[in-house]
Image (cartoon, rainbow, N blue to C red; front, top):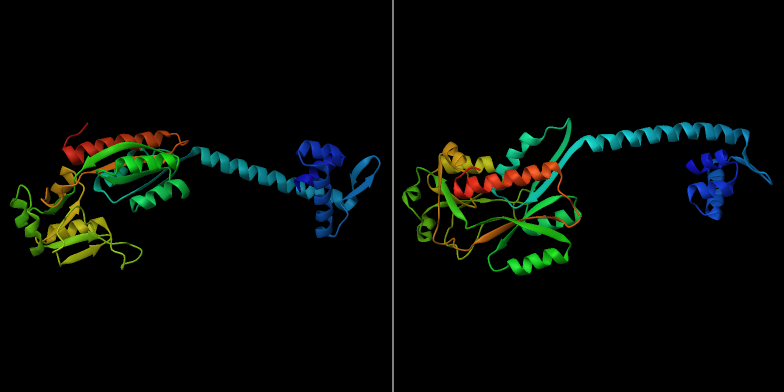
Length: 305
């Protein structure tokens, strides 16, 4: 339709080809195919150029109106996109990241906003940032593998910056016998029930936390997808525990929980915030980075900044 309207406006296929930046033979072919599809001759071709036939003039008039509506629609969508506040994050399951994401809600101040948060494995985080349109990601790297992992990120066109370094801990009810220990001996854990994350897509694919030389003697497991149920079960049953990165003091107090180090959890882990090399932080991305810094200080060090 745009080709036909421009030919009618220029009165010449050669001038239209220059205006449209389309080769003249290709433009002529497109017009022939359009006329064949419609079963109508749109233009009279003569030495003076190309003039619309009566049926062609009718087509040009309707096509002009349709194209104007399309342009108006595209402009409206572009304006909506410009006004929309957009943010997307993909990350391993971690309370401190979820806490930062919750804090971010205070910065959602546009009239139109789209905010996405996806919890998954570190390998999938990289794929999400590279291929699935997630702007930011957080990956977790075991101590000793930083050099290899970070070099791999650079080779794949990803930038990174450190977020937090930590050892996993145990969280349990404040009424649990384990709560009396300054550090839990992993040899005591087989008497208790471990609550673990379960894969929400396929219950046969269980995302259990097995870090370091953590005890394989634990025979009782409860696999739960959502975090609220996990915390409720921990608070309600003093015989349950869970392996976590860290909870905030407020979350522990509100949930009637405590967290303790464990002798079987000795390896250090490092989290990195990643993004594509050419991607520049937006204002809301910067706000999230600030929330993340505050959450790290609160959850891992018990201090506010």
